[in-house]
Image 1: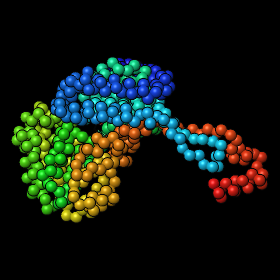
Image 2: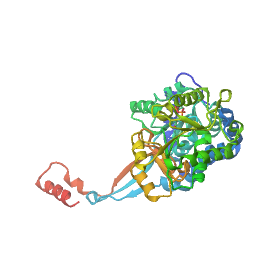
Image 3: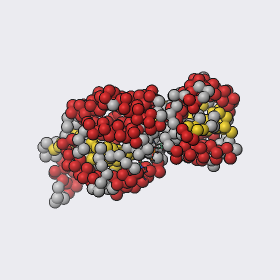
Length: 470
Ligand code: NAD
């Protein structure tokens, strides 16, 4: 672990800067070796410690840790292993006839020294996932995980310390001030995952050095259910997507629009399947994590109180246990537009539901808000699905399920504007940490060489012909 002391971060940064070419010139085989060591740590040597740490931090169930923290990083590593050789091959491109005598290629080179700042909600996945892309691209990296999951950060720090030298990859633990200090340094790329509010701070700091950024942000992700679905199946999927990690998931359905004709059936089905998943005493279920800390617990509690004051109806749930940071899975109808529940990203186990008559009302509503990170559509009607996709904007869409788009590494993952800038996963994540360097090589004297000063009528004619014909 890197200690906090004056100039530590600058010294660390400088040591990585010096080392960047040696790391950037490693072969794909050497990079895969490093990724295999990380994979081995996650799959075997540190697996139980990570499970225990996540349970200590917010009682994350073991199965959720395996499925949503460990598996996605291992899957990302496997994907990179299958593809890295071809991604690193110089890519020959055509050269126009006006540049006759030359050849051209694109070299995917490392950006250099990178900073990865990650959030607390999927601390392993969102710290090591981008790290896999950064290693694949040949960068040196400083990692700054969230201060809100100290047990998990400690285990990740031990993994990094065991596997890498500081001048290649280092993990820095600490409070927000640590991120603020790091953000003063002239990184070659910053990959930030967190809230749009802090994303703006990161982008501002990056602009001082014209550092490129990837911003994986959040927001309110809408879900639409029309009247053509098998409601029971849909409700199960939504309960899974919304209450996994107790709703502390950037791509969880934030609120749901249902066709007004299915309201009664929707509530009944929701109650039945919630009980099935978490038993009637959800607070005793070992399939539900806890709210990350008292501050977020209080925030969510205040959202519920505010919604009730503004005449919302709590159809299911609504109870909480302060001593355990527990909030019951809750279904709310008629939350007013000026309630905190409808204005802010919820990031917890509260699901507001709105009813609609005509799908265009839904589209207009969504388009009146910031572009969401995810938009979910449950429908059997192909025309409705196409109509919604064509008339809205979102970072990603999953049709007839939720969350699953995150797991396909052939798809770019990320938001748009307020929900993010840039993409991650697979080739898209690799590109984010890569400079696509253009190389043009001249082999023999070319047409342009005939056009050098002094200019004359003959050369002017050559230019005229070039504009006309090439
Ligand atoms: P956050 O923005 O509060 O913090 C994220 C990171 O930034 C942490 O490491 C924190 O230490 C650091 N940070 C906080 N304040 C800072 C400041 N003033 N200056 C510099 N650094 C600062 O986010 P969070 O609460 O950890 O995570 C929740 C948010 O992240 C939600 O909005 C969620 O939607 C979003 N998120 C997005 C994705 C995605 O992939 N798009 C994934 C997970 C979470």
